[in-house]
Amino acid sequence: MNSVKERMAAFQAKLEVNASHPDEADEKLNAAVRELQLRARADRTRGILVTRTGAGRYTVELSREVPYGYTEEAVA
Image 1 (cartoon, rainbow, N blue to C red):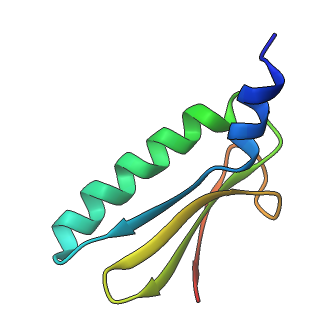
Image 2: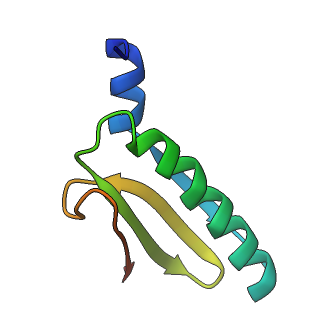
């Protein structure tokens, strides 16, 4: 069973992505989503929300608003 510390890390997972070119953004966003997919498996109650916060700026986070196993996009 996972430790409480591991489960808390999964709940608090939020990554910032900054890119200066669309190809760079795709690469970094894909890597961030893969990382959070691994963390989401620890709990299986949250999905992944990718939010565009500005030109070349994104947050990628585990969210209760997204069902486990899904990734959704939003614009801030």
